[in-house]
Image (cartoon, rainbow, N blue to C red; front, side, top):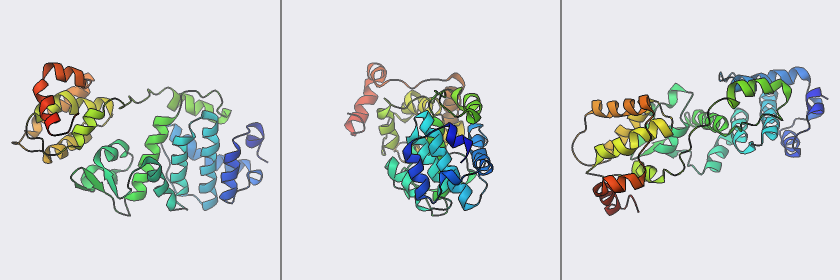
Length: 287
């Protein structure tokens, strides 16, 4: 039996998962462990390796993720990442990711798509079908987006406490993950998400972009300027009123990015621009 497993007992559920995948932990050699764990280290170092390995190693890698997260206490997130790798041999795992997130895998809300769309050039917004704030995925794109989603969740959800991590992984975790800033939470910005999902707003669009959308997308959501501009332009295409110059949108996004501007609170907008709030309330966008 590998000294790794002998020295670091893990959650019984990890053993049960391994057995369901046809792997007996007692039969795992140190060499197999090293091959499978190399991919884990590549992700922790920020340079994920997506090369295809043999089925046993792919499934073993999945189990290692489950064991690794048992020390960190974030099984919810790393389970999704592990499922992505196992999905190469078990296709249904990609659908599991979206089921747990409550997302229709073939019709993803734009806000969710922009939140999880990372890693692959093929998932850039101009490569997908977009209608009325919904991204429609093809069978070819679905596994790629599943991987993006799993990777994003895994990095965002990894706790900072690495005291119980097996020694062979501890340095990678401390150096590349634990020292990262936790992403700013978008909790408390439901009113902005409501505006992002709305259609047919004829007035106040520039103020909405200035107060909320530009700073929210780049400062809170962490989108790149190009992604934020694409999101705002898509939002504008669903509204009424005259044309807004693309250069103005770009300037507002870059300003918010450069200065780290935070979006205005709903209370502040109520105090300083009550007319805008009345418009949005009248449309049922805000309560």
